[in-house]
Image (cartoon, rainbow, N blue to C red; front, side):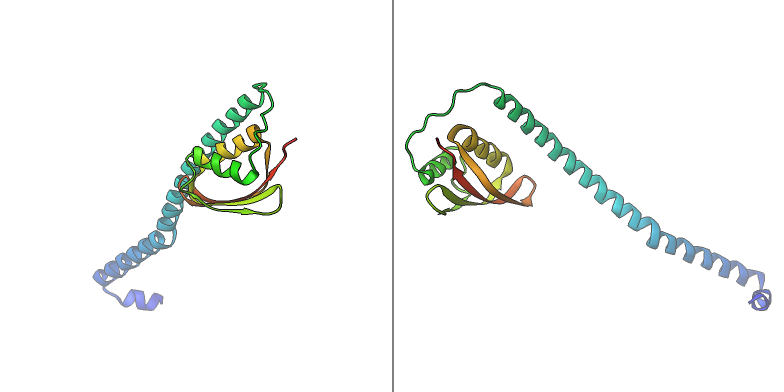
Length: 161
C-alpha cells in the first residue's frame, strides 16, 4: 500500500486524499449525524406531547380533589334503569354521536363502546356516573387514535343502595 501511494504523483495523492476525506465525511453524516438528528426530533415531539398529557392529567386530578372534598349530599335514586341512565347521561353530555353500542350484561351491568370520542369529554362523564349515579367502572379499555381522540370500551355496574 505504501509503495502504491509513493508511486502516485502529488496531484493524484491530493485527489485521492480529498476523495477519502469526503467519503469519510459523508459516511459519518449518513451513519451517525443524520440518524441522531432524526431521533432527537422524534424525542422532542414525544416530550411535548407527554407534557401536554401531563398538564391535562394534573387539571383532572385537581378537579377530582376539588369534587371529592366538596361534601355533596348523596345522589337521589331516580328509578331509571341502568341502560336508560347511561344512554341519557351520555347524550346529555354530548357523547351520543360517539356512543356506538350499549350491551346489557346482566341485571346491574352494561358494556358500552365509544368510537372516536374526545377523551376530555369521556373522562368527566365517567366521573359523573361514579359520583352522581353510583355507577362503578368495572373495566375500561382506551385506545388512542389521534391527538385527544380515543376509542373506548367500558363495563359499568350499578352500585345503587
